[in-house]
Amino acid sequence: MRFAALALPRSLLLLAAIAGGAGAQEKPPVVPVALQLNWKHQFQFAGYYAAIEKGYYRDAGLEVTLREAREGADPIGAVLKGDADFGIGASELALRRGRGEPIVALATILQHSPLVILAAASAADTVQDLIGKRVMLMPHETELYAYLRRERITRDRFQEVRNSFDPADLIKGKVDALSGYSTDEPFVLQRAGFAYVVFSPRSVGIDFYADTLFSTERMLRAEPRRVSAFLEASLKGWRYAMDHPREIADLILARYSRRHSREHLLFEAAEMRRLMHPELIEIGYMNPGRWQHIAEVYAELGMLPRSFQLEGFVYRKDAGADLVWLYRGLAAAAILVLAVAVLAFLQRARNRQLHREITSRKAAERSLLEANASLQRRIEEIGVLQDQLREQAMRDALTGLYNRRYLADALARELARGARKGDPVSLVAIDIDRFKELNDAHGHPAGDAVLIATAQLLAAQIRGGDIAGRWGGEEFILVLPGMALASAARRAEEFRARFAAWKTPFDGIELSATLSAGVAAYPEHGDSSEELLVAADRALYQAKNSGRNRVCVAEAVKA
Image (cartoon, rainbow, N blue to C red):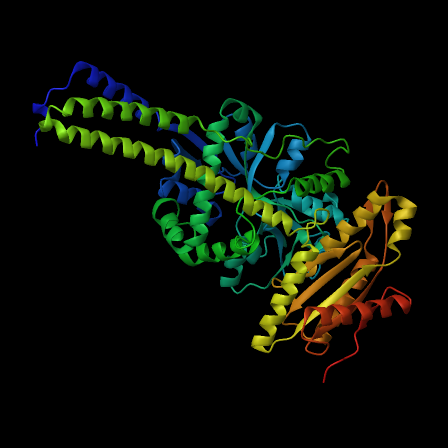
């Protein structure tokens, strides 16, 4: 069929031109965007490589340039000055926002920070051994300075050396310790057979976010849709990267950097997954309360004024759905349908032009499909929000630990798994002693501070597969899969002693408290959640009645 041989009426050509112009507006123009990285190319930025490679940014109308960090430069400052539109930062984002800089956190990639201090085993057994030693740090690693200050190690008590970012300096003995990521430098040290120890801020309750995608208030005001599109494409890239780590490792080697080997990149990917928990928490999820707590830690250590403000720091996408593109698509579809109707009328007498009607109908169908795709994207956004709400529903609002409902389900699940595999499962019930008296003496905010400190200590002590949560009031539950009764009792005793020695800063004073704990286990004390909870509860009250500040093990009830 030769379409050029058929002449269309001028009115129909005008309608087709209008329809084509309306449809063409559905694709936004490609806009250049710069993302400032906070280090050199490696798996740490895998999601952004995936978003470029898979065309997620291009589909959003963006042409993204990734900029490596220069040694000694300030990546956050580059975004604030307008040299880049977006950036990657660590917990110091809250510190700088609290000091008045117009930073807006868009999404957190790592739920737990990988920033640690790595020391030669010959130089230090505990973090206190760093006093007087040569330690490589960077000025922007505020999380580590907060950790050292909480351990009462001020900057004048060790020899501060500018970080060379080379683990070889530690191996060769040029320094005694250096800062690094648990996802990166340990690979080099392990391959060299070098004996080292790791000091983590989490050991003193400093559990911060890391690798947070951020922008500025100026960018949000000027280009809200661009920010939303960039964020959505980036998170889509991260989901792909964590599902296909080997593919992205090969992409990094081929297009970005050969600084790390493929094995090194895959080591980094595995460690990042452990810090992200993508199977439990939607990638990018942020809790405003946890950001508030991060800022409060900085204020507690004198790094922020007590009157700091974080309002507007955490990005909130407009709750109302943006239907502009949908309306344009429907308008284009309506115009095309009108063109089809006119063409159909003319073709009643001109059967030779039947193919034109078919072509127009297909164009209308494509437009309707595009409108449907837009609606589907909105539905997916709602699904993401629902996932975030489900995660919040599993957490205790005050402490951030799992809540009672999740703990009950998790205990039943672990008991079923233990029964299948023949593995033990231990349960520790913990109750803060004389908590009501503490509330009466200092007020409920003081009680909340002690509850938060308890949760932080628990989170710092548990293993990867352990489950800690707040059962209610001042009572906490610890589920220990695969741990026998005797080991669980020792673990509970270690936590009891650590808690008894802990001081919680509050309103210019230091609060102290003790706790009592009851320990029960499967199969000694039963094979159901109810039986283990009852046994642990009885042991807990035995500890209370025996003078408090102690751990008691439940009496066996099964052969």
